[in-house]
Length: 169
Image 1 (cartoon, rainbow, N blue to C red):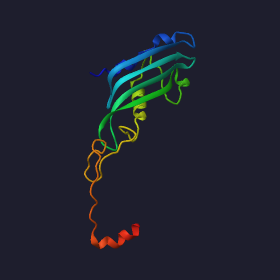
Image 2 (image 1 turned 120 degrees about the horizontal axis):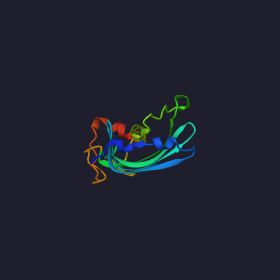
Image 3 (image 1 turned 180 degrees about the vertical axis):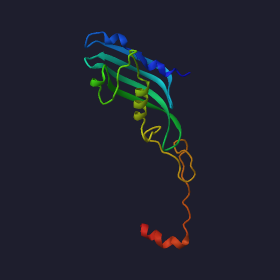
Image 4 (image 1 turned 60 degrees about the vertical axis):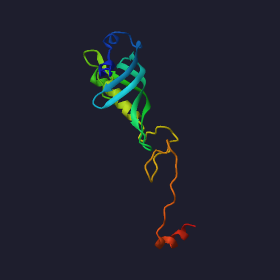
């Protein structure tokens, strides 16, 4: 069962009225979550720390999760662990906005789902491997070499190319 992405929506309106330096932690322990439009995360664990500053609310997030992936060598499905760690400022006014361009909504509720989705997608390796020593697929028959290591008999070489094999020596 997937939990809605609203679980990452934090009601931080009360922190606005606190003194500068006040902080509050919001823990997350979600078995499975769908972040629209295309990201399904399992075992999402982490914490978001929200701190009141003079310019706005500083949000520091550390999370880990696993996502389904396909090994680039052997094409098997596996669970890829991901870790993210980011800090963003939700500004009180447009004048105090940072490069991230985040402005604290008037409702006092910030939605971390789009940011978490983006950070998790950036944490996915370009070439995911099921294990570091994955042997991949046999280039001749396509069998998974992790499950059944084998070798094929040498191919017969066209007799017209015999003279070229001497160059290999």
